Amino acid sequence: MLLVVTYSAAARTALRNLCRRHGDVVVRRFGRAALVDATVYAAFLALRLRESHRGDVQIERTEPFNEYVTLDAPVREAAVAYADRESKSTPYTAFAAGTSHPDPDAMRGEEL
Image (tube, rainbow, N blue to C red):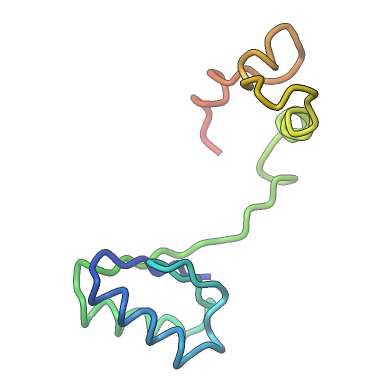
């Protein structure tokens, strides 16, 4: 997919119009941004928008996030355990202390 992000009111208006006119290529719209299909036609529309608004439009290629390929099991298990914790106000640092769950500082330093 392609992520199209706008940085000006004029570019946002043009993106909104693009999404309305070409809804068949739009996967999801987020106001200032939209995900569009990874097709040549969608890329053409995104490039046309960028040419009209220059630096006010950014286009990025994205790929779906697959946590089973990208992350180790302990990280996934920690996310599940933290979501199911008894006290919802407990921060992750306190929750993970003294357990086998990954340390938040160690996770911050690791790239995906």
